[in-house]
Image 1 (cartoon, rainbow, N blue to C red):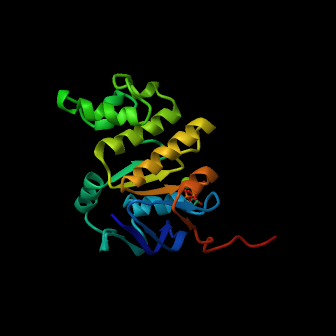
Image 2: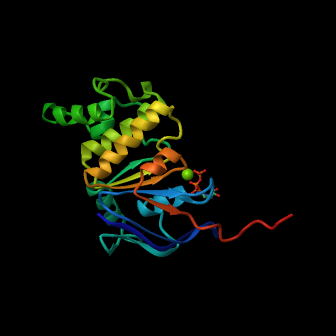
Length: 215
Ligand SMILES: Nc1ncnc2c1ncn2[C@@H]1O[C@H](COP(=O)(O)OP(=O)(O)OP(=O)(O)O)[C@@H](O)[C@H]1O
Ligand SMILES: [Mg+2]
């Protein structure tokens, strides 16, 4: 699925956060959203993932405008196509790992697929543990296991390597690259050089619309 921003701007409480952002994210590729802290990478990622409506411009999926649609259309996009690996992980701490992957109680029929997803991210055998027992990096990989389990077409990822040591960073970069190689559209907000190097494209955020006055 091709996800595109067409001249997208977002203002929050009247303050411009991003403006004039156009980017094309294609299947089989990893696109990095790059720029300094506060330049709006997360805001653009959320807008592309329909979590945040653009104030100006449009977001399209395979050429069809998907921003500004009904809540029902957005839910269909999330259900059928998208998976998110965001900074707050989106993990439900009170539920076991297995529930967090499948997002429902899992019966016998789903076990093989569930185990394959956990094995893929290096969490094999952890399915019965409460998610609250996992470390930050493990929770990030758990969010990725959910995307693997659902075979998501589009993956929205925010700073996946920020809290990881070098070994885990390499592992996680490899996992996202795999996802793209298998045909998914992977969109990553990052300032990690290793992650950026693994991406097929870089999109640098525009400079802020209003620059602070010089002293
Ligand atoms: N809900 C919000 N309300 C008000 N301001 C916001 C909101 N979300 C983001 N901002 C502001 O928008 C700007 C861009 O934020 P954003 O999180 O998109 O940046 P970023 O490039 O992802 O930064 P970082 O590299 O630190 O993650 C920041 O100045 C931030 O304070
Ligand atoms: Mg950010």
